[in-house]
Image 1 (spheres, rainbow, N blue to C red):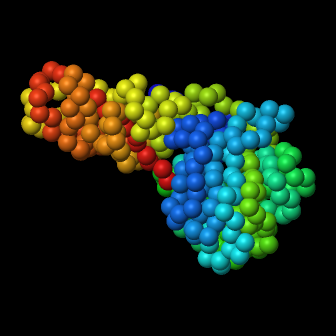
Image 2: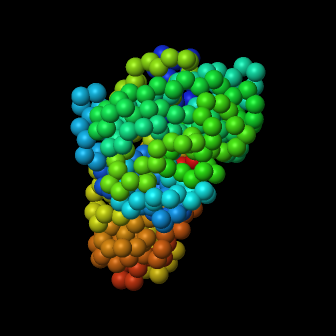
Image 3: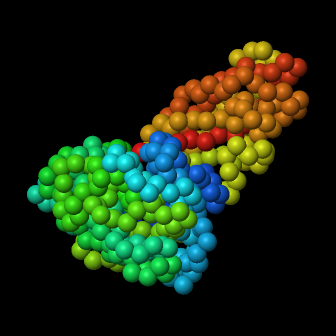
Length: 366
């Protein structure tokens, strides 16, 4: 059966699914439901679906969230990804990173033939809005992070949406993966990385850069804002109109990398039974309980990392709906890219036939 994910993996010969960016209009936010996320650690944090934010030092802090204040309807979008500096880093260390990024799976980039003499040109386009003006930067990189193409673009007017287009000749050198489920291309939007992590704009380099030398450092100005939406990466030397996919299609594409059992708009770990995964308790208390297998909504990129949630309190236990008793921590069994099952120890005072219930998240991010 052909579904949205299958079609997206068929390459750039389609008149649709030409955009290799998933959730470029920032409409899906399964993890945070529009809530602000603080970025100030060495962990790369997913914000809206498929988009990561990174702050490698504690000197600078910024927040990221879906829809952070500016209106996008005038340029045809209802959502955007917004970053705001809350603690400025006025002297960014050479080794520091501050960026937004989007990693594209190899199945969706192999048709570009990068790393060969037949490498195809691509065009990156997006809408941007910032409280700052000047020359800004970003890059495209390979999986090994030893090939990159730093680029620049100019924001001419503060607090005004402007569309940017960057055309990049495909890389004929370096190692680029083929049709696999690893990282095909990394797209980076620099927010003020250090001198060791930026390079000369306009050509391929044998190093991993996330931005361009001399680009504007959003992280360097307190309360500076940077918003982006309508991001599209496509084969060819011109930017076509942004591909507005149906919400359900975009959600399915995102769920290849992350999904949860909660209703859309509910942040994981919320104390709610709505959407919880339920199964019958097969045996009495204090015995090993084998839960029924649960199918994922979409086949994952790879067997995901599972996290389980007690919907009645903090913790990773299933709850007995009849008694309120909690199981031991959940152990995953038979975990694959399309389904999983669980084991646990059932709580005291419960009986076979009663219902156990829990929530989960499944992450197969690149």
